[in-house]
Image 1: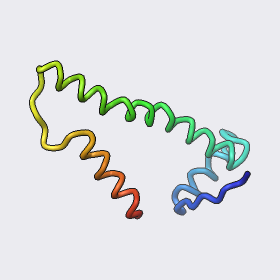
Image 2: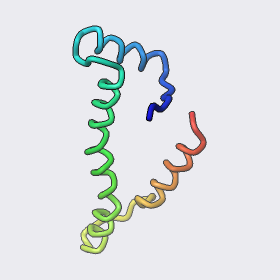
Image 3: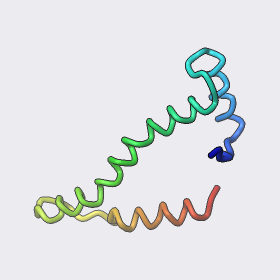
Image 4: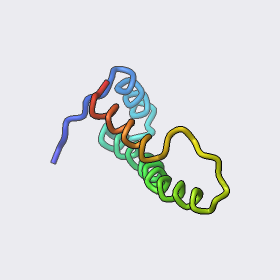
Length: 83
């Protein structure tokens, strides 16, 4: 099922240049490639809170001002607020 995605003019221009250069055959293919690049990044981010807790539990750490959960809440609020 098609979905509408709003991109800024710079994103549109980059996508169009990649298609014109023959790197991708269609806008959908270019967007799919971008999403595929995001997956490993997001997967790695998802493991960070547990890695943080394991590091703290090891006893060999110095406390930071913000925990991963606090950062996650901050970024979730920013995402909810939008641009």
